[in-house]
Image 1 (tube, rainbow, N blue to C red):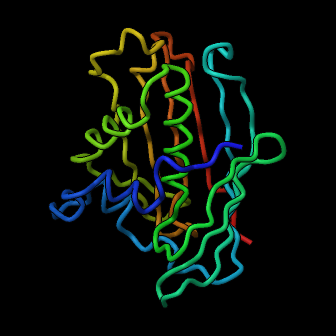
Image 2: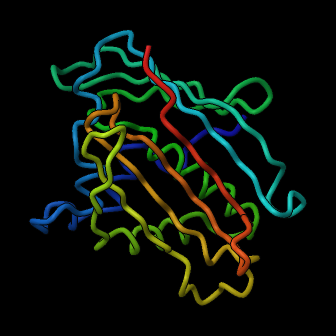
Length: 218
């Protein structure tokens, strides 16, 4: 099993947005995605479930399609506003070792899924995942959140295309068109409602798509 060791959840957020998270008065990507106490309404024993789907136009290049689930179990942390988060990252033969995450206030799902994506892309392109992390960081540094409802409640969407001007995009199998969409709402437990990372060809057909969606709390 591959361990998530390139970026820790908190370290990933800090590295991604250092110096930019609190600079603006309008809703910025950093504030909406990484600065909110997304776990504060959850209590010990709560479990958040997310569906995960991966598909592509070329399994030989990008890997086989599959559907799976991700589970986060929340327990009390060492402080009143902190939580310990245990992770079930996929099932059976696809299980990844991830967590537990100690003393979290934000939902580690964001960092987990960005890491999963970075590792997949790095394997496809034989590239350093830190190079791609830098591209995502630069794209999100000044990105703003757009209002978007979730089940009739207020929510936000953050959307960026980190690789559209990449100097190496000719070698990216069309994935320079990758768009990262993050949807969040305070109305959803854990606040993250969807993470969609996708690229489409000129006809609108899917080249690559990873979608993680909130699937309930129990």
